[in-house]
Image 1 (cartoon, rainbow, N blue to C red):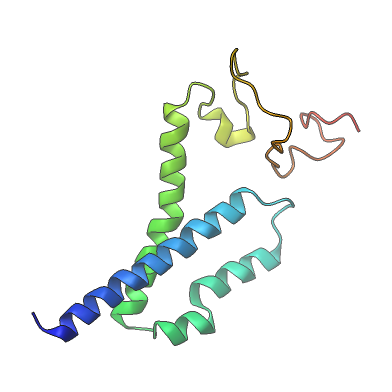
Image 2: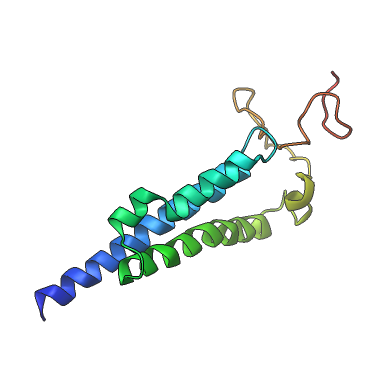
Length: 136
């Protein structure tokens, strides 16, 4: 096997893996944000997807940049698919959880330890908002 082919293959896999990692992380950040979506968030995502550093690592119109793009897609939507699978397998959650965070109450012997911080959901966990559960 030619070494240049092996190097190209490993570079493609590496670019895909890097893209998958960034895509997964972008979905994670957007899912657990603590404030409403703002214009700066869009700028950040565009910077991640096609920023100067990425173009320096993976030049545009190359197989490496293509593998990075496929990795971004795989990571971003892979996070969502894993989440769908886990919610589908759970007895405490259903599709309503994706809409507004509804879940079934845990039954004995399950409990949530006090040191575990509740998930922050924009617009739902804000003090004074209807349905937020907050008394302020």
